[in-house]
Amino acid sequence: MEIGDGPEASAWMEIGDGPEASARMEIGDGPEASAWMGIGDGPEASEGMTFGYRETGQMERVNRILRHEAFVRHMRDNRTAEKERIFCHHDIAHFLDVARIAMIINLQEGMELSQGMIYGAALLHDIGRHEQYKTGIPHEIASARIAPDILADCGYAPGEVSEITEAILLHRDGESGSRKDLAGILYRADKASRACFVCEASEQCGWKEEKKNHIIDW
Ligand SMILES: [Fe+2]
Ligand SMILES: [Fe+2]
Image 1: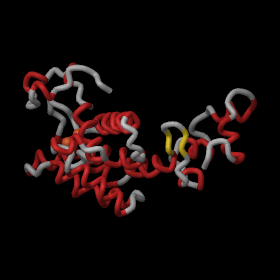
Image 2: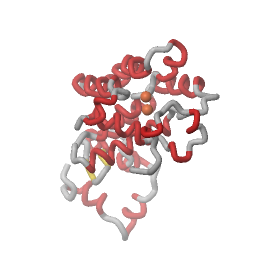
Image 3: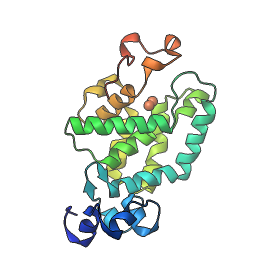
């Protein structure tokens, strides 16, 4: 839907005076609020209306991932496995850092990847990390096994599932870092997300000194 078209759009754009404007500022109430947050149903959400950085239809399926039973279970297993870990964790804070840095890179480099693809890859790229601690399986493989069913359940098309799964599989492969696609963005955002410059375990960390982040780039 074009911004400026139709009654919903114009109501949404009215900021300032009148009861509509003030009602719209209250988040959490009624169907308008949930559509506005991008987590509701209905035509506005599924059309994928774009306004600035926000793509409501895209974020609807991303939010389904958050509530997916397997996602919740694997997140809990990651948390339990990393309770005593002094190095970087593979938790929701990391996943969101990766997603948001990837969005910045996406905009800066004009790649026009959808928000759903970027968040889908970022939320799931380390979802199987706990299996690596238990069995030694590389976690990109564990995560790439877990991700497809979750993505399919959350409304991703088969081609999208394949693209995200490939990106997950390559997220530790240095050669993918220069790629101008989802795999490349995921690799770079993942590496850029770590705050080595304030890490107390930096001395003991296995990352080579030249790979550590000493400044903030994003
Ligand atoms: Fe990873
Ligand atoms: Fe990661």
